Amino acid sequence: MSLVELIAQADERGLAASGLACLDRCVPLLGGDDLVLRPLWASLADGSDWSAGLEKARGSLGGEETGAGAGPGGRADEAEVLARRMLDAAPGSPEAAGVRLWADACSVASLQIHRLLDPAEDGAPSVDSRREGGTEGMSPLVAAELRRQVTVLELLAGHGAAGLRRALDVSTEGRRVLRAVVSRRARGLG
Image (cartoon, rainbow, N blue to C red; front, top):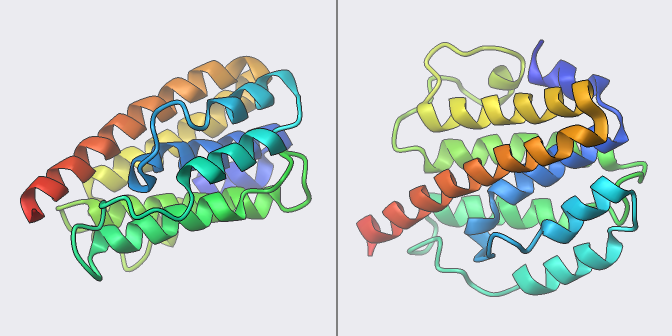
């Protein structure tokens, strides 16, 4: 099943977890630590209000230059803008009417971020074909992000709230990968 189909079939919790996982993996671009989004994960697990955790995360990650761009107009600058948009667009509640649109936008943005930061070229004209199942000529970083997105949605579809812990683990792994990529780019450009 394609990523687009998985998103279309996901329930609210799955959609919120999918969007949150994409954002969580991109936190290194915003200068955040590994725990900045944990309150949101906890809210998804216990069904509590996540608006306070979201505002705290926005405050922690808001407005400061992170240095990820390592120069004006670079691919990492563009990636940082996409990550910031994911955070800014997060709904005030995982049950909000716009959670499906947010999850879908986060999916696209996260794949685009990985495409921008991958030193290997991706053979597709856009990430849309990747989300629809086209894998020919896919760059390694984009392929790994696509697998993570699919895995998170499958975990939530198959295990409900019990799949959140494993989804967080998948996200944590992806965050470490992206943090290493950002660090390598900064060293290479600095």
